[in-house]
Length: 638
Image 1 (cartoon, helix red, strand yellow):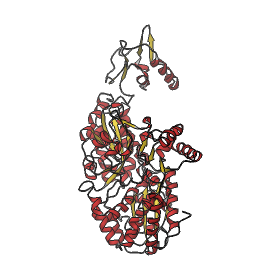
Image 2: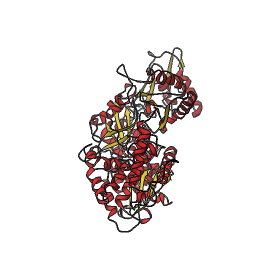
Image 3: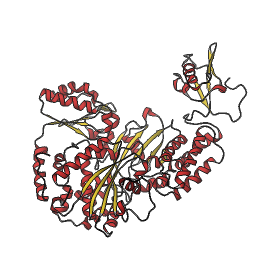
Image 4: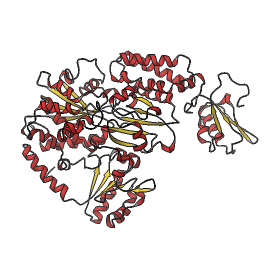
C-alpha cells in the first residue's frame, strides 16, 4: 500500500489494475500457498508458514510464500498448494519443510505421502480430488488462491473491476437493481428473500439518510461459511457493499456485523477496509462518482438471536439485541429508524460476480427458483469435512457420498441436519432431495445459512432434537411467550423422554406445541426452533415410541434407558468393566454395579446407574444393552 497513490477516478483505477496485472501475474516466481484459515491454523498452519518463510530466506530461494484463506478441505489440514507444480499437499507440518524444499522444490519430485490416495491412485492436482470435483467455487474463488491481506493482488486478479465497470459504462442504479433481480439472487443468510426486490424497496423510500448492513454473525453451531469468506476474501464483500450502496442511493454508512469469536475475520476485514479507504475506494466521493460510503466493523457478543435483522440493528445501536415486530420492514424503518438494507456476507460477495459476468450467467446456475451456488459447512460423521460450494439443486446424496465420500468408519447413513439448530433432519429415504429453498422447505427443513451436519446409525434422533432445542431455548431472548415458554416446555419433555420417563401423549403434545410456537413467535428464531423436533418426529417417530413405550434407545445413546447384561460365553475376563464401574461409583458415591464371582462378571441392576461406560470399554462387545422391562423381572441380571 505504501507504493500506491490514492485513486482519483475510474481511469486511474484501470491504469493501476493493468500495472498490477503485469507486476503480479506475468512475472512471478514459484508460489507456496499455505492455508491459514481458522481450521488449518488450529492444526498448526501458522507454525508451518513461519518455518517455511524462515527456510526460504535462509536458503535464498526465489519462492513467494502466501498465507491464504480457507482451501475448504478442513479434514486434511494443514494444506499446502505449490505452484507452478500444481501439487496439493495435505497434513503437512513444520517438520516436513526440509524434505519439501529439497525434493519438491529443488528436485521437482512430488512426495507421495502428502498426496491424496483414491482407489489406489495418487492424485496431485486439487481439481481432480473427489472433494473438489463437483464443486463450483464462485463465492469462494479467491479463498485459498489469493493473499487476503493484499488489495494489490485482489485488484490484479480483477477485483473492484465490477464496480469500475458500473462507472465506466455509466450503468444507472436502477439498471443494477434490475440486473440483480434478473439474476435471481436470493439472500444467503437463510430466509432467501430476493435481493433485488429488497434493494428496490429501500431505494424507493424517501429521505436522504439510509444504511447498509452486512450480516456476518453466523451463530449456527458448526457453521463457518461467512467466517471463511471474511478471512479469505474480505474485499469481495466490500466491493459488493459498494455496488449495493451505489444502487440503493443515499447510503451514508455501512456496518459489517461480525461475531466476537472470529478474531482472524475481524483482523483481515479491518485491514481490507483500511486498504480500500487509503486507495480511495471508500470514503467521500469515491472515484469521483458522487458516492460517499464509510464502513466500520461492529463486533457481536455471541448472541444467536442477533442474527435476526431487527435484533442485529438494536445491537449495532448499543441496545439489547431483541427483535421487534414487523412490519414496518427494515427497508422502511431500520437502523436508527432509517431505511436499511441488510444482507448476508455471501450475498454481497455474489454481487461483483453478477455485475462482472452478467445476470444470465448467474441465473443459468441452479434451479428455477434457486439460482447460483450456495456455500455449506459439511461436518459430522462424514469422511471429508470442510467448506464446499455447490450449484443449487445438488442432491444430498451427491454431497454426502461423492464430495464427503461417505460415512466415517463405513457406518450406515441415518440423517442430515440442514440449516443449523433451527433446521430440520432429513432421513435416508430423502437422500435424493435437491438442495434448494423450496425442496428443503417441503421436506420440513430450511436452507439456513448453510450448516450441514451428517449423522450415522449411532446417533439418537431424540437426543439430537433435544440437543438442538436446548441451544435455541438458551439463546431465546425471552421477549415473546411462545418462544420463551414453549421451547422450555418442549425441552422438559424431551429431557424426560431421554431419561426413560416419557409417557403416552408426549409425542402429540410436542407436535401441538411446536406448531403453535411456529405460528405465533415474534421472530425467525422462535418460528424455526421446533423444526428439529417436528422433523425427527415426522421421520423417526419409531425412535420416540421406543423411548417412551419400550424404555429403550435403539441407537444406544440414551444410557439411562435399558438394562445391561454380560454375556459370559463371550467374556474374556479382562476386568475393564469392573474397573471403570468402580471408578464411576466412587465419583457418584454409590456401590459398584459390576461384580465378579469365580469365573464370571455380572451386573447388579439395582446398583446400576446406566452410565454406559462399560459398553464403551469392553474390547469384545460382550455387554448386552437391551430395552428396560416395563415390570422388573425377578432375578434378572442378578
